[in-house]
Structures are given as structure tokens and as C-alpha cells.
Length: 123
Image (cartoon, rainbow, N blue to C red):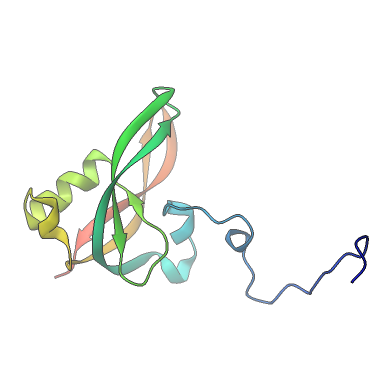
């Protein structure tokens, strides 16, 4: 191929924006599709990731959980961390191997209507 020649291929029928701009962490937008409102996952591990916070305008350490067979992790807010603690105990390593459901809820945060991910126990 010549250096000034552009290589292209057609888009597949199932192509989504995330295929071209993938993110490392799960967000409510990932689950807004009607088919994926609630997903069941198994916690594989937890990490502490340093992330930039728009609210504090600084880097903060955040607890993140990762799931078996999935490429995106979930940055835990206090609500979801407390929910996991209530379900499986305060020792994070005890969460490994536990099955949970993640769903989308609508709420008001920072004065705006928005969506958020919420963890639920599988019963």
C-alpha cells in the first residue's frame, strides 16, 4: 500500500460508538439500551485507581471493582460501596466471586437530573 493511500472498511451493523472511543469504566450510558437495563456480573477483583474528579478538581483514589469476563470496571461511589458492604461484609476481598446485579436509576445529583448505576444483590 502506498503511504498516501487510505485504508478503510465498512461499518458493521452492530457497531456502536464505544467501539471507537472505548472507556475503561462502566457508566449508566453503557446500560441505557433497553436490552441491558440490568446486568448480572461476578466480582473478580478490586483495585484502587487514581482518578481526576471534576467536583474537587484534583486527583483522588477511588475503589473500583472488576468483573469476570468483562473489560470495564466500576468506580464505586459511597452508595454502591455501602451496598456491597451490607451484602457481603466490610472486607473488600470477601466480595470476590460474589454475583451482583447492576442497574440504572434516575436521580438528582449536584442540582441536576441524571442517571446512575446501582448495585443490587441477587436473590
